[in-house]
Structures are given as C-alpha cells and as structure tokens.
Length: 239
Image (cartoon, rainbow, N blue to C red):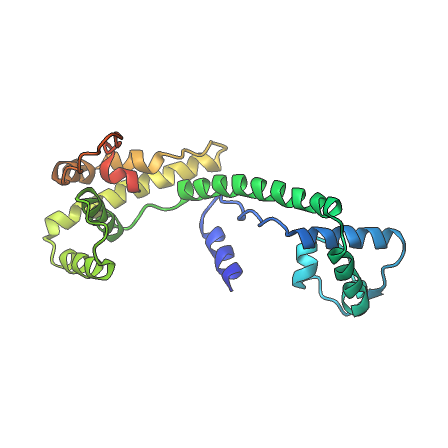
C-alpha cells in the first residue's frame, strides 16, 4: 500500500525520478550469489508456477522469463540448504557480504539525500493556508515556544485564519499566486533542458509582499549563547 502511495506521489511531481531502492540485506546478497552459483552448475529446476512479482524474486533482482524459480520455492529443501549454508559461513566469508551491505547502505544514503533535495525543489508551493501555518510555526519557533501543545496551536491557527480580515488574507493568496507563477516557470525551464534550481521557492517567496510584512512582524529570536544563528531568511527558511 505504501508503495502504491509513493508511486502516485512520484507521478504527481514532474521530473522526479523514482525513489532510490533500499540496500539489500546480507542474506539477500548471499541468496543471489547462491542462486548464481547453482544456476551455473545446472542445479536450478524450473516451474511455471512462480510469479515474477514475488517479493523475494524482486529483491534478488533475478530477471527470468517464464517459467520461474522452482529452485527456491517448489523445492523447499533447496531454500533450507541455502539457509543452512548461510548459517555455517565463516567470519571471512560472511564479511564479504557485510562489506557489500555497508557499501550499499552508504550509496543509498547518498542517493536518497539527493533525491529528497530534488523532491523538495520540484514540489508545488504551499497553499495560502499552508503559508499561514508556516508563519505561525515560525513565530512560535522564534519565541521559543516549540514545546507547546501541537493540537491547541493547530486549532487556534485554524480559528484565526477563518476570522482573518480579507485584506490580510489576500497577502497569502497573492504570495501563493506569485510562487505558483515561478513554479510553472521553473518546470518550463526543466522541460526545455534546464537545470534544477534548488532555491527557487525561497527566492520566489522573498519577492512577495507577505515576506516583507511578516519579516517586520516576527518576534525577535532569543539571543544565542555562543553560536550565531542565521535567521535573516525568517519565514523563507522553512519553505
């Protein structure tokens, strides 16, 4: 179910590639090696009853055309034998797979961090109400009140938004409209071979009247002891 939701989210964000695959476990890597070894020795038996969408086949990344793996599934003793061999690997043999797992994890973390950054750069701007909620949380953060009850803050923010004067609420809708214009321009550049601009949303927000007015209204942050905190961007930092 989570996979279906992730695929829907990826389709909804133009130019966003699929999320990087998580690294394989040591045992899965061993099974791939074990399968390859026995396949080379003509010990793989074939059956048309195994689906290519089976989770283990997917994780092993075995690309076969029907029929599929009788070896691992229809002959349970083969899988039991593989598990037994895994348990009896000496430390040096097991270390080979441990090293591969560490390398795969490091590569995944790099790719996933880059993917998350790209996803953020390709997402639509917040709605007008979303901008307002971000402003409220930024006010609270700067005032040092992040330990307050989240539910009560949300209820108060929703109530204040509903009762806000139209001319004040218009600031948020105008900001959203301007940011959507910049969002479409960004996508248009990508459609024509342009490069991703990772800071386009912050820069677009800084061009709005809402940014300049909320900067003047924000509560000054508490003075840090030794570390200087970069609060110049204010609300734009959380977009």
